[in-house]
Image 1 (spheres, rainbow, N blue to C red):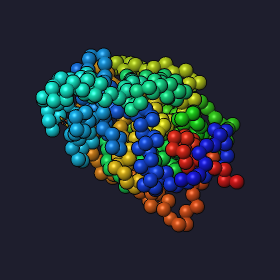
Image 2: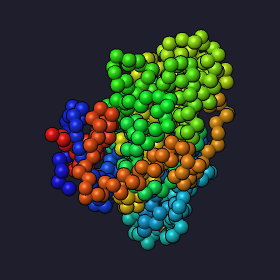
Image 3: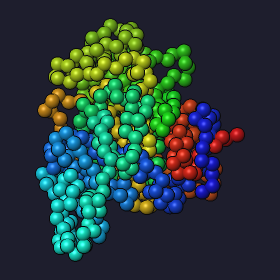
Image 4: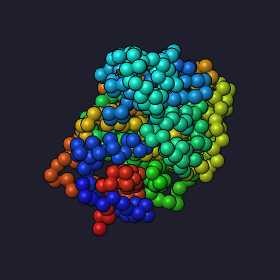
Length: 458
Ligand code: FES
Ligand SMILES: [Fe+2]
């Protein structure tokens, strides 16, 4: 581990490479447990998962298990999942389960010697406390707290109680994404699987549309997938771009755009329908797909692409309003800057739309650099009272489990993990325009890890 630890953000525009130890080395994976995970904000759950006082769940990252509980109607608390007596995990997270959860919790009783804690983390019962000769103060018997913050409808946790607010951690990424009001969205579906690749290998499969031509070639019939990518401090964004800048238009950087073809009334519909159906009914909504299906009837032949998009969004917005789903007003410059999808450091990807988002996350699985826990979920704005009831669904990495497009992504990730081990692999050659999000990820990762910074190719 003696590669450089920094590179200037301006150098991300240049051709770069970075070492593969971050994906392959067990020592690197062990070092992440000290240098990365305890030092970043992480999503533990969506707020909607804990509506009532006493609702709780666990979030595990490597060896650390965290209990999040609603302690009061307006307050969430988080604790390390460990009993301060002899260190038994307070709440069991069964092997093979996504997480543990429950409702109406009034206290936590340790299964070993029965020490008990209220939902504020205070110790409320110790057998024979007099034996400690007065040494047991609340300081040593209280559950160890984890910092909690809310942003975008997510519950974020940080193991450092002195950590900056999550909005500061998110910086410009948070500022831009806040326009999408994701706190008003609710789960549509959520899936997870233990997958045979490093968590970064998995996450990076969703960080650039450069792979669409090679991996999802069926999509090329409906749209072009040339993309830009940009660093925003710790985080990064990518969006659709034109190979020829003369044709650039602001709406085209997001997933809501005209498709390819002579008649944008038809191509817009074909593109969105194909995306929606093969992305497991995510990255768009029923409303948008239905409104797109009417474009050919509602607009005259020859309508320009920009006018087709404007009409489509206006009628979808009206359809949604009629059923009680209200769109946020997002200024065009924000919409353009928001692009297609964000990498939220370190391990989350968010593809956002006006009323929906498709999110990915990858976490280490044990200490094995070749395994990860991979999750994906769709969130959407629903009329009040019509939010679907969802749970984490374990799904095999197939088209039946995740839709055709994700199955194609799964069919690369484990082979990337294998291929990077080849003696003949000289190191990644990320595209300096389209895969800058990934090199920015490694730039930031190196700053935490003290190793592995990208370096100039020449
Ligand atoms: S370890 Fe929890 S009560 Fe002893
Ligand atoms: Fe993909």
